[in-house]
Image (cartoon, rainbow, N blue to C red; front, side, top):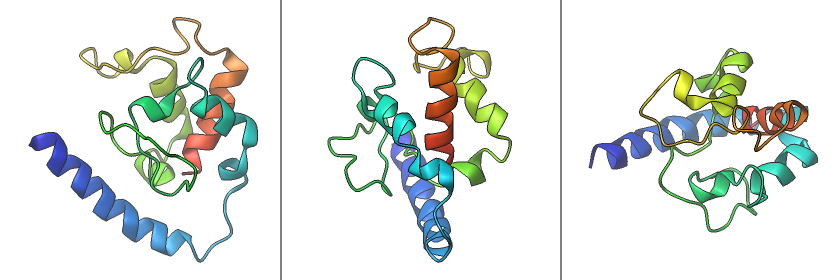
Length: 122
């Protein structure tokens, strides 16, 4: 129940931020096709297995396990912290179930940068 409440709050907060952001031009990072491709690839990032992306129309069959990827630049004002989370989420939270994509070599340094750019733009 707690996770459901957290997701609802994140969506509510994020929807207000998205409404304001809709008036602005999309960030270049949100249009990063290589990062999106990696994030959607089931053999690479596979972000959709756990995360929803409410602002991405073609993000179908998204998971509900992780928090929705919305208003990420507001949630992670320091982009390096978001990158670190993708690289090895266990560093910040040892009990996390998020795979350490960089630490375990699932994604290369360059791929981590591309996925970070894409996710940061959501």
